[in-house]
Length: 156
Image (tube, rainbow, N blue to C red; front, side, top):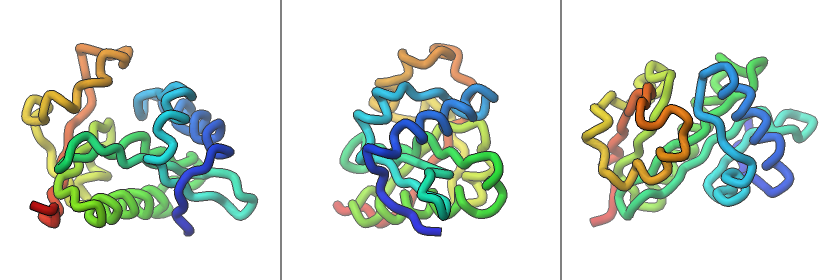
């Protein structure tokens, strides 16, 4: 499995993939415009035909904090380690950038806990992380689970 940075040509497929899982209540939907605006945050994995089968974003929030967003794996590729490979790419990039703390909001906390994340009360997260929540259809009644990962490698 080869992890690559997303390209403009991947945006439509990423949008379809993310929103197909959102339609099933497995993640929050993303607008196509949001994917384009944040394309540099995304990693993808493609199949042998060069079609995106999975994506994830590492979105920098502050000098010491980043968020894992939109970790989506096509249904026929789930439970094959694809999501783990993408998550590891994000954690590696965060470490390379000197970002010691990574968090996520998810409906699948067990997956992230297997990778060293721990659950936290949402209110423990800095207010800065809530900047886009007002666009969410579930705001203010968020039912996602907050998890946090500390690499301990941040620059001081």
